[in-house]
Length: 331
Image (cartoon, rainbow, N blue to C red; front, side, top):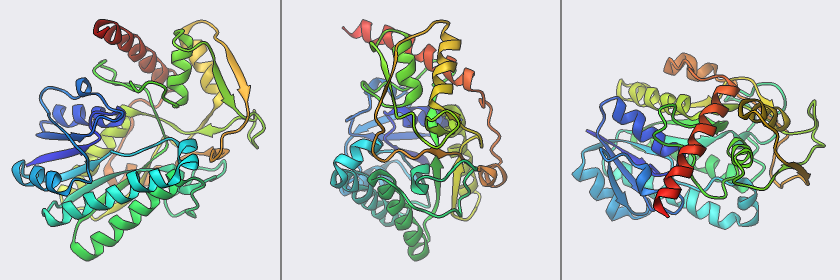
């Protein structure tokens, strides 16, 4: 048996590959390398460069590697970009996921784990949001992911596919062992942007709006360490293999930090100030979204290890320094 990880050369996907290898799994990575990097894939995993919508390729991988599970990370993730180019997001996130689900069903893959998002809730408010909350995505990104959840639900009912859709809140940090991290140039993740600015990789960073209905006027998010997130995926895979029913679950810590609080944490951990400027709101940004993750804890037996903002920032800063050395060595 092996696990097919789509988008496994990207940020979260590469952490997932390491998590699976550490657990003794055989891993095949399918990634078209549009935003990922071949060097981010461990040599113990098999990297295949290609598109998840290539049905023949996916069918061959499922057959030749005895794939019993797919963990699906491939997709586009930038909210304002989805507002500007919605059809591209529906193509890349929804249509291509449909093709992948079809290949899984035809290939007899029993278990499917999907990378979903808290953006399906829209502006959920200050209280931790549960999985049964109203689904009201405020961006094409969130809508594209919700449509994929619906497709999985319906395919499971019709074909016996069992799945877990894990709704991520704000993923941050890097592998504590320094093996991989967020490496995409021009990334929009707040903690990465702040760390890049602190290390003079950017001349300044921008806060998008300070007039939200929150205590300090900036958006509040639930930041989850990427290592805790991929551990939840491994537990979800174990649960499905043991006969567990399909599940939709939040992955977050249950408390949030504002943009200004995150910036203060980076300043505190780094030890000096950096240039922060204020701009207008971005389209599609909700004021506050925080997870109620009781279901993941009870159903998956998930117990986060890295629920500490300063620890998340330390790992992110450490990776930025490693990444600088990697980039210098390739120049």
